[in-house]
Image (cartoon, rainbow, N blue to C red; front, side, top):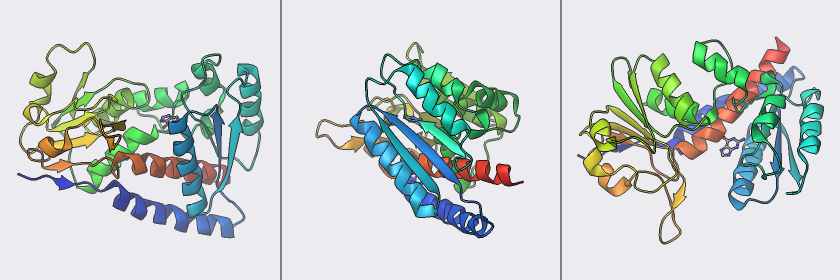
Length: 283
Ligand code: GUN
């Protein structure tokens, strides 16, 4: 079997066109959604990510500001920047790009963002809302994965979903979203003893570890849906995911590519969250 691709670029285009249309009508009413992105230091991957985020904002008609701050910035200075943005009426979403330099406590900075402007969905108030099923912002990457499953009309009810990875940004919220759709969910991680045994039972596998070839063809049940959240480089320096794409695509029914899969969906969901935040201030 050769798996069908779930094309994150194409799905993003559709969703971003919707965001752009809604933005146009909001702007006609005098409201322009605004996102502030704070980048501390010069991590090369982070620079690419924030550039893509700001460009995506411009493309859909948002107001956006990118603040590049020095790597030796103090935590107090970063907290002061966030506090100012919390009170800035032009700004509906605040994103502090992670990772932060070691002198800054990332969790303290995240908790300083007003929850209603936390479009990353990392604040404990939003994490708690997801946990309990209350309204709030969902982290963009797992939310994008859910949109990809929705795009193929996949019904998760009663299905076994295996999430590999337990980060606060992807693995844990992913598991909660799958659970909310009535899947039976297993979370695997670095201490999991029998990973292959578990993934072989999965109808859906989400690989979110950040390591190449975490999931190979011999670990996948024929016909499973495979979502690859990884963003790694192979021996030749080429972008690749956590999944052995060549092998797994012979076994799975659907698979997301890297690049062009989950990556663009993360940014798309950031736009969706920022738009929702702007709309909330309006209503
Ligand atoms: N670093 C890697 N992914 C993300 C993300 O989704 N949001 C933020 N703020 N930082 C990240």
